[in-house]
View 1: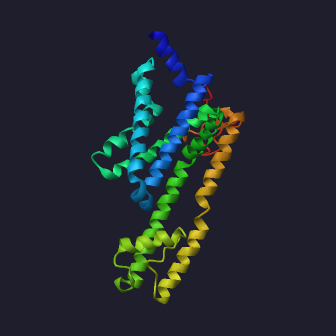
View 2: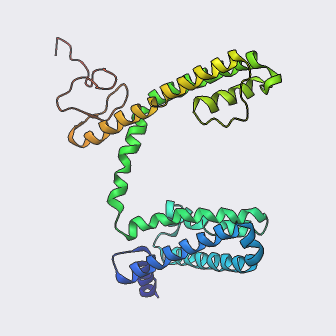
View 3: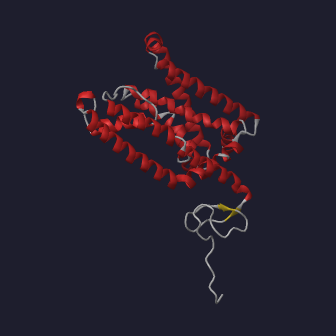
Amino acid sequence: MDNWRQRLYIIIFHTDTPAGQRFDNWLLLTILASLVVVMLDSVSEVHIQYGAWLKGLEWLFTTLFAIEYGLRLYCSPKPLRYAFSFYGLVDLLAVLPAILALLFADAQYLLIIRVIRMLRVFRVLKLSPYLRQANFLLTALRGSRQKITVFFASIATLVTVFGTLMYVIEGPGNGFTSIPKGIYWAVVTLTTVGFGDIVPKTVLGQALSTLVMITGYSIIAVPTGIFTAELASAMRGSDQHKHSCPSCAKDFHEPGAAFCNRCGNPLYPRRSASD
């Protein structure tokens, strides 16, 4: 019995054997087919004509995924560790929406969460080294969070001021029925989306909207520049000295650097004259 569980474990959890590769390939194809079924079922014409068939296929895929999840728990040396791991939770979420659909009809469309299971393709195709490159993005986000926070705080202040001014200038008669409505217009205009559901009618309002649009084009590159600079710094980090700044916690610095190249504070405590 233990030999059977061990063979099953190798097939399900390992991709370095022919049987394991075949299992993962069939699993990915099944996940992809289940996603196609869910998407087709959301089309009203297809649902009306083939709804019963699609529902049967959805339950077939759900049954297969439930069996697979049970087998993973059965053959795993540490079932609880697998159950609470990232892939374990994703595998469970692939089954739960179908059960919730028995109580809530629209819950069946949550089955689209199965697309997360396609992340296994990185393991099957030996693409795991590429995932390590994502650490550069995370490092850049952590390094630029303070600057981006200040940027978004400034944007929030701007849209509040512009929205209030537009409410005062245009008023409810031109669609600006409240300050939040004016702030909504300012956000849409500043981000250059321009839905057009609310537009200024007066000359002064149109002049203000022109200023808002120009401001939007002026600041749209700010967060991109901040993130790009931090990303470039993170990618150079592999060739730099690893030492965390005590002030801003930046990880990497130039070899022999005494001061942080982000905040300018000393990297090492100053020595007294007596030392």
